[in-house]
Length: 301
Ligand code: NDP
Ligand code: 8X3
Image (cartoon, rainbow, N blue to C red; front, side):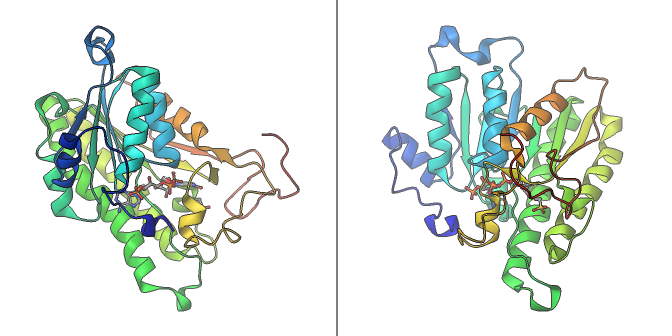
């Protein structure tokens, strides 16, 4: 559905011509959001967080909790208008400093162009949240759609790798950093028709473990979060290509909310430096496993 809305820069109101030009040229866009005297970046605690897929769902909720707590942010995703909206809201509510960086994680050239030209004050990324990802389709293996498969593998696995490859060297150089990958319950337990999506999230699980092997001697924390069903996201509508009826998969039980996952990510990021939470698996109370869900109605909201 939103593939069609698609990632245009022309159809929305950007603040200035300079900003529009910057986005069109794939230049980093620094949005200063409050009078200098109140800017969160001037707080001593102000760490820098890069979130992929920040324009909706879990990424947006994660951006919000970090912004509310005074962190500086680099927000990425393809739909610039979503990022611009967030920037405006965070400007008004939290007075933090934000860099908008639109790129497609599947395109290694675009990832490199965006991340290799960061302004100096946005180069030292303390926390990377590898969140951008998606499911496409829900079909048995013998009926699978090759384009869906490519999209999931390119986004969930290769995209995560491209971003990590560019950001982790700075963390190694500084002997400081934290990488949090957004996995899934689907990366712990395969389910019928989940085949390729599950495989990509199993890959995220494996990459999280191997990245930790590679980076722990450099004082870098690597962890992952593995949620079950999460509402307040575009996950289902994307999986079912905009089919609103098919995407109604949360009506008869209370799933996690995007803010529940953001809260857990924030918890991981705010432990003392000697503590690394390797994985948080979380389900809604009414969900016992990928396939075992109490669909008798919402117990709570
Ligand atoms: P959303 O669809 O709301 O968010 C996904 C985000 O990823 C979007 O903001 C999208 O932005 C971005 N994205 C997708 N493809 C690309 C791309 N090629 N390049 C850059 N950004 C991209 O769903 P969720 O918030 O649910 O998904 C976030 C993560 O959580 C995913 O990794 C998903 O697998 C995982 N997850 C979701 C669960 C759920 O039930 N919702 C449960 C467990 C894990 P844009 O389109 O603008 O690029
Ligand atoms: C999303 C959860 O169960 O739809 O990763 O795969 S599920």
